[in-house]
Length: 386
Image (cartoon, rainbow, N blue to C red; front, side, top):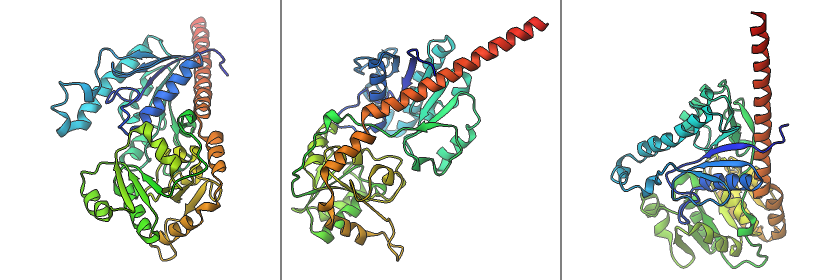
């Protein structure tokens, strides 16, 4: 395997600066930031393509004077009606810069997070592009990825093994679990008398199911997330708010830690196949167990019976298994909070995540360099014959 330090181009988004505003839930951007900064800290030359407002300590910022979409006054009038089109165009402008520089042999590897914006460019470069998949592989995303599975120099990183199930035969370079900065999460062995549910206020996150469960059990429930300006919130959550069930609004990302560590447990009654739930890892880092439905990556993130409980989604009658969730709440004191912290240290630390990306990048760069040398040698032989 190649041992030298790499030149790495990385991009996630220029919709927001990097790191993102603290009141913005943008997990992929935090992950991109941590990977880039820690690889640069290890001595790799990381060129981070992002908005000019970004603040990086170790990576070299490549902004080309472009403001973040949400900070660009010339773009703001278009965002309410056509946000996706604006972001798509603006991000592809930045991505095109990466591939122009790749033609000039400036990098050994390209790491991109929004594959929809860039996967069509990957075979045009002579170096590998690694795409981290943050969303489920379904619908049009599955169709698109299936179409690119034989593309040269195109590699995918899944964030859980469960994420791969709809398309197990894509060109995966590996599975790398998202990592968290353990310095930001403090262990607490003595929680307060409340349970927590956190995330986007939408049906797939199951916040309304947490409300139903709280009403059945009589527990104190705190809800963190948004947006509150929706029919979902107005009909499924707001009518049940009161002394026992409290809505806290959108909480500053870095202030969530206090909520996690003081909770008896985090409830995670999701309705969808979530590729990875950072909320679960962040909670367990504080010693707080997680009770979650058996959907998506949950069995990989929560160690059933050790760091929380993984509850079957359906009951025997094929209804959503609210009763099973209620039973798990009754057993929550069986979970040792020390197990939760230790589990995250072993599986979901920043160091573990960066180690795994570094291994993948070194392996692909080494393989690519070897292939180019062989091709160059063969071309030389062919020229000699003629």
